[in-house]
Length: 221
Image (cartoon, rainbow, N blue to C red):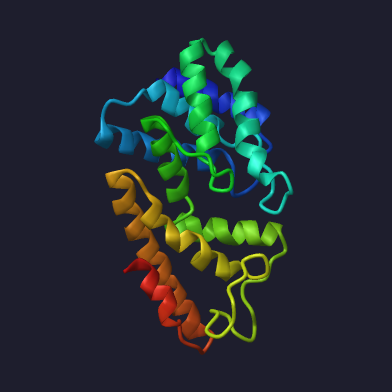
């Protein structure tokens, strides 16, 4: 497995257009988390899971790209010849492709295998916690998206809009993720990381001389 991981890492460094939020370190974290969850779940094909973890962002389109929903399917297609060269069987390639396609939040493809559920949970966990905070702002910077509405930063009296304000994305998506986790360990870790993010938001609100509205804290109840 160590040799296979090294070969996969080499491939993605050559093939993947990396950005600060979707680099090899992101893939390393996703694989490490997926491996931990797999050991907790049991009966998982680790070769398939490792392949999917390292190749799931082969085609990484910006969040505001019109074809963003197709990125995971394009990644799965691009993964096929790579995995064939790495001596994966046809069945393993199909399994890895399904996990890659189903990991995406925007694609809306339902996972149908344990490996797919684990990859989806693991990728979403990397959007939470301390790393998730850092990645949120890296992506927002790339998209030139402001931190918050200067008049109502935490949407106390306005509709949330994460196409305009970076912090709104936390409410509309990120803090919703713990409730969407499928694996037992994924749910436990997600809730812990989301609580850290909520503590950060409370401090951020304090430094902005305002209060965090209750509808933020209620997301984790």
